[in-house]
View 1 (spheres, rainbow, N blue to C red):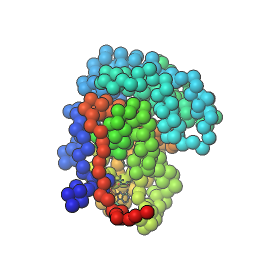
View 2: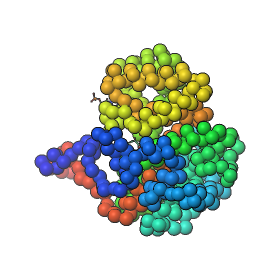
View 3: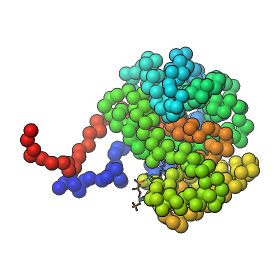
View 4: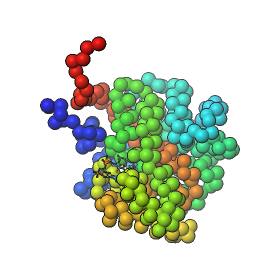
Length: 371
Ligand SMILES: CC(=O)SCCNC(=O)CCNC(=O)[C@H](O)C(C)(C)COP(=O)(O)OP(=O)(O)OC[C@H]1O[C@@H](n2cnc3c(N)ncnc32)[C@H](O)[C@@H]1OP(=O)(O)O
Ligand SMILES: O=C([O-])CC(=O)C(=O)O
């Protein structure tokens, strides 16, 4: 009976661990990141600032940020074998599966696979943050028989990431929108993928294993996969009227509408979605795609009226990526590349204060049977 009272389907509301990294304070509408507020950081800082904040606990000054960037740049290159690794995958391989394969394969090249101390994990985290954008962009190019786009050392970190994806040097404004999206995707307390990574790390497994598991989790459309699903849905809707019709049809069929709802925010707007909505509004004007913005707002309004549900980050990140010219199949891998930061910080924290995750069950099967 005690077990029954403790049971929460989906661990809804259950506290899984202690953390100094982040906390969603829904009442205060704050996403706390090591004491700072994520939206304020995203409005005033850069992704690399968050790298130092999450991995080392303090925001860098300009000099520290630039030496961090130099560190990352040293590790951009992928092992030469990766070209043949990705060329051997079936062309239909989803970029998230290629990414999962790539991260898993990187473990074999890691000289300090057994390192579990905070300083060691921080170094591995930087190697992962250096290489994952390259894996995301170039596994996609290889799978599509496109030329590999080598990283450009002279570009800032996230500008280079966007450049490797599109093959074109972005404008400052494009690079800023992209960097802001990476910041809002960087860390979010205890989503399924972070929990998966911490569960794996809690067996003392290495960080590559933990991240590989997290990629698998993030691919699902109830989690990171929703950003791609949102864009497909918008394109299927075509116009504001078409989109409204599509949403009604899905609601009548009792389908989940991608990009809406959230386990923690529930019936409130995800603060990150509000920020991305503003980036999208500005980009839509620049690109003369006010029609797309109008369509998304109509969807937001309809879902509020019909279901009392609000957009999550994926709903507004998707059209931002679309207007930046990013292939839809890369939206979730980009989410993962940004989240690599939070995941590494969580894995490090797990090692530092480990307790094996091993919950119990509420048994509902038969008993007393005999062979
Ligand atoms: C960055 C991120 O990863 S954010 C999450 C991205 N995922 C999505 O956008 C997928 C769409 N959203 C969902 O499926 C859900 O809102 C989740 C999975 C994110 C959270 O769900 P949970 O906390 O498990 O709530 P659950 O799925 O049980 O929903 C509760 C109720 O709201 C409804 N609901 C929740 N989200 C949606 C939605 N997007 N569309 C339609 N109905 C919804 C459910 O049908 C359910 O209704 P009921 O009580 O009448 O059966
Ligand atoms: O917090 C969650 O459950 C999902 C989410 O928004 C994220 O991972 O960014």
